[in-house]
Image (cartoon, rainbow, N blue to C red; front, top):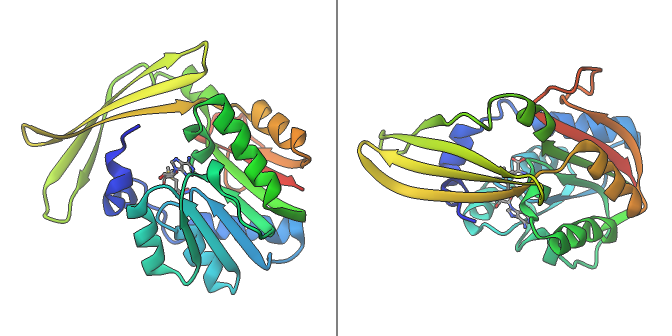
Length: 245
Ligand SMILES: C[S@@+](CC[C@H](N)C(=O)[O-])C[C@H]1O[C@@H](n2cnc3c(N)ncnc32)[C@H](O)[C@@H]1O
């Protein structure tokens, strides 16, 4: 797996902006609604650049972030007083239980091997305090497959710190049997290809997410395709699942 944006966190944030902590506020609202208060501590698995940790720490929550990308963690460390671990979530083994757990931004889909996916859910269970609230966010692959977005090549564009325009030429193919999407992306600066990504993702669907969480002892509290948890047709870009351990 190679992902140019995961080693260039400033470009990652330019491609996926989150003004002004919309996601962090969603996490806060979810905890307040389902826990009835803010959690004392939060574990963010696949925390990336630490935007949610930055917001939640500012509310006085003790946060721990985990991500295998040292570049992402370095930016997260610079913006929040929190504890960080550079490792894949499936390898985590802390002697701490958390009242809130976040697994946002399609992180579970990075656990492509069935054994890693199973370990990933086991890690969530092992680190959840009794009554803990977990919020999972995943790409809505059902809606993506129904649209032309995965079958049609597309470009994403971003301007780097030097002011150069980078174009990411993107195409997907899908391995239906193993439920994997394979994304290829050539990053061009002018005529030069500066990086080539090949990312494999395990396509997870809402019912599988709920089933795996239940199997690990959680109760499902809510499933939505939007950050407001409003009723909808489930065509949104992301799926969110809230569960209680
Ligand atoms: C799309 S980003 C999401 C970051 C953050 N959670 C957010 O929502 O903004 C996916 C993150 O997952 C991380 N990641 C990749 N494989 C992982 C794994 N096995 N365990 C934990 N995180 C992983 C990447 O390094 C990247 O920071």
